[in-house]
Image 1 (cartoon, rainbow, N blue to C red):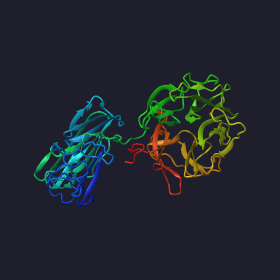
Image 2: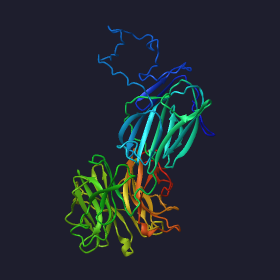
Image 3: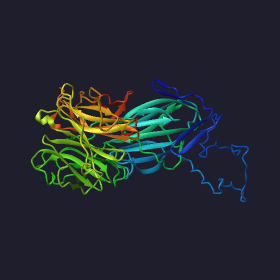
Image 4: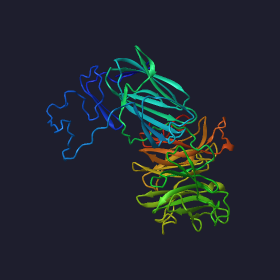
Length: 542
């Protein structure tokens, strides 16, 4: 098949000696000598033939009624007959891009939904569809494939991408030219997503002697068996939380009643938010501190930097607040379920005369540790980060354990008078300590250090790995998560006021960006600054 995107050529190979392709759950085998004889794909993996079996040496038998016998497996059981081929394309409809709520055969793709839903269970917004089957052109030649869609669409023919308009858009026309062989069925797949507002999708073609028209069920075929694949995912863009939500602490809970990601941020009652995918977030109605402060705290004015971790068979939340003397300290709350109820500790987990903030947890081969920062910057002093072993339940320090200083700020670098907001990642034998530095406004940055033991010694990367750009400033204090073998940084940043400073009134929004790894093993976040264009859905590469 020869494919042409307007003036751009994609070499896909012209030979059709034998092509095997998988589309969803069904396989198509196109054998040698297909010619222009039209025939449907054979689901069983051989060409249909009026002369009987494709394997001339295979034994044959006939039932007493004269009908074809049912195939018998080696164990004596009867095989299920292959699903019938029907006209049209199989459409798999996904609500919220995740839930397959409808599978049906659509005779053709000529939909103008406007503000209506394709079906009640699909909803009107944030849905995606995958259509799949075979396309059998009536004659050989160069065909122009056309899509008109609102929003994104992708088309593959014979497993080759021919149209890629995977972006939110109003009704947009896309074309691609494809060389097809008459009467030869080739796999076709169309992915589509809808964001909001109007929705429509049209698939058409034209060729010499064939004026442009919707591709109809007379040349489309499929089977009705649903696929188990995930729904098509649109690209996303930052921010994923467009209001003040600083210092996001995120945990993945795959076995929760609502599996997915849970996030807590600085401020107030520290409400817990939920997302299935790191992109769309909403409240749960649950908070770590429903009364606004622990009973033992002087006030709730500095409830900062919460994180939730799994420790010793339950969930433990670590957070900064103030003690009875209004000095910054670390507190805990624990719960058997992420949805609570959350039980406050009877008192602070840790106190320090200069204040202690930004607790973070890490488990090293079953041994729990807590990392935290002494707030020396409030007194014109350095700001060291310490690590100390915890008791098995994570609610106190292990008896006899001692704090080990693993990092301290260098005021002669980008760090200025502060380092804080640390998060540990273990990869390829190294412990990577992500941390933030400098004043928490537009001067904030993200850096990294690494060691081969959690207690160090740590080597700093040097320059920050995440800094400002024309859209975002002050990026930092985040969580690192792994999805499908890829790492992502969930963090906060300010909007750029246009002069390199921050827009105070908007607060710090939550952003998500992928972490790459350089050849020498150091992490790199996006292009070294927050993304400001469409990005592949987390866990996906396209």
